[in-house]
Image 1 (cartoon, one colour):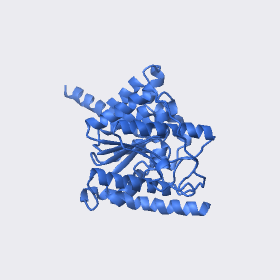
Image 2 (tube, one colour):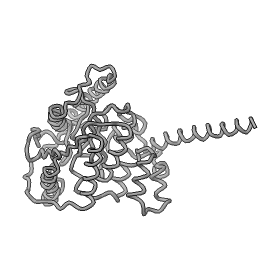
Image 3 (tube, rainbow, N blue to C red):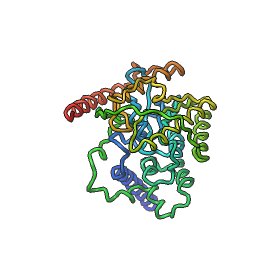
Image 4 (cartoon, one colour):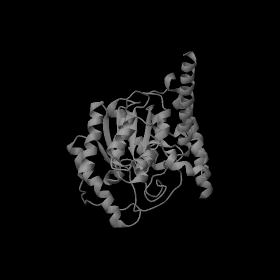
Length: 344
C-alpha cells in the first residue's frame, strides 16, 4: 500500500514538473507581440492589486502611453495590456482576465482598432490570447470567439507550443528576456516628420458587435467601480487619404457616443490638448514615438490625478520595485536616444 502511494505521489510530482517545464518552454517559443516588453505575458509578473491604471487597445495604445512616465511624475502605477491590432472583443476579455489579479481604478481604452471587428482574424487574436494563462477566461474566449473552430486547430490555442515549436531557429534575446520594466509599453526615439493631415466630420456606423463589446467593457468597469476613459492617439495618413478619413470617422462617432454615455473621451488630434507635433512626435506614419507618448501620458496623468484623486505611491516602501524599474527604463531611454541620434 505504501509503495502504491509513493508511486502515485512520484507520478504526480513528475507530471507536475514536466507541465511546469513545458509551460515555460511554450512561453519562450510563443510569438511575442510587437516589442520587447511582451505586454500580455509580462502582466503576470506584477504584484497582485498593485496597478491603478490599465491601458487596453492596439499598438496605438502601447506606443502612446508610458507607465514609467506616469509613475515618475504622479506616483500612479499602470500597465499597458495592449497587443497588435487588438480586437475590441479581446480588450473585453483581457480586462476580465486582468481583474482576476488587479483592481485598477481607471481603464484607458485606445480607440484605433475599435473600428475593426477583427475578432475572428487569427494573427491579432493570437497576439492577445497566446500569452494568457490557461484559465477560465481563456476557455471562455475560445468557447465564444472560436466556438466553430475544429478541435485540432483549437488545441494550439490551448497549447501554443504546438503552433510555435518551429520557431527554435529564429528565437531572439527578447524571447528569453522580456523587458518587464517597460510595463507593456514601447520605447522609440525614432522621428518620422510628417505634415498634420486635416480631419473630417464624416461619421462611422458602429456595428452591433462593436456596440455590444463597448457595453460589456463599460458594464464590467461599472461593476468593479472602475472609471472608463477612451482616447484617440493621433496618427497620420498611412496609405491613402480616403482610407485615413474613414479611419478617423470612428472618433467623430465615438465622441458623440461617449458624451451620451458619460464616458470621458479625448480626441487629441482634434482638440490639440496634448500638444502633439507631427514634425517630432511620430516614429512612423501612424505610431507615436517616446516624445509623443510622454505628451499624451502627461495629459492623461494630469486628468486622472485631478479627477480621481489616486494615491501617490512614491516613497512607499511597498512600491520600491517601481523606482527600480524606472531606473532600468532610464537606461533604455539613454540607449534609445543614442541609437536614434546615431541613425540620424
